[in-house]
Amino acid sequence: MDPYLWQLPLLFVVGIVAGVLNVVAGGGSLMTLPLLIFMGLPGAMANGTNRVAIFCQSIFAIRGFRRRGMLPLQLALLCTPPALVGCWVGANVAITLDDVIFKRVLALIMIGVLIFTAIDPMKRFRQQQEVDLTPARKLFLMVSFFVVGIYGGFVQAGVGFLIITALLIQGLDLVRINAVKAFVIFTYTFIALGVFIYHGQIDWALGIALAAGNSIGGMIGPKLAVDKGHDWIKKVVTATVAVFALKLLFFP
View 1: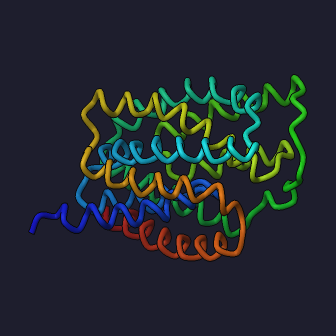
View 2: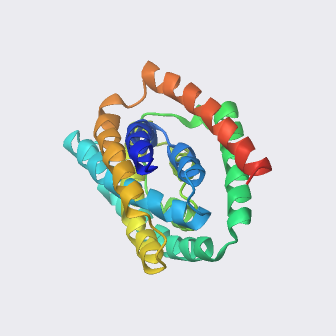
């Protein structure tokens, strides 16, 4: 049987869930990236293929947040340039990394994200207010998003949690944080996609199937924001990510 007969529908369905999770919180790639690897793709190709879905999902997420007046464009534009530079660095590192090492690094990242999510140290910063862009805060954000860009270019999975952390410290509410997150990820994915396409590290059939699902999730996500459904999804994803992380760590 042609493996695409089950791979494409599965990626589409998982892509919807991952797309919603990416928009309302983060960590959707912690589901899709290991799934692509389990379907037989090398680490670098799974990484590149996942970017097709992230790019498409972000388009719909940005549109949804803008329609609701929730995108602080000035802040998003400030954070984007350093993320673009960092992304180019991270994507080139990802291309050259040994496949087994990449899988183990991904597993460790997944475990770290699980711990961070469980502890939730940023809870006390969640306030409903805009960011006052003082010179010190601008410098902090530019340095932070350069690091975000390196990480996002390298692996993408879990980058949303880094962005949320950087902006929660500044006192921004979660809805607007997710809007900025979608904008920044959309722009730096241009760079990452270019690197992976140049090196031939994309399976377009799997990428398009995943992108279709992620795009639907990107449309649903802005409507949901954070509610009880989100909490339930995160519990399911936490269990799934734990299994994937153990598999990648001990059986790469």
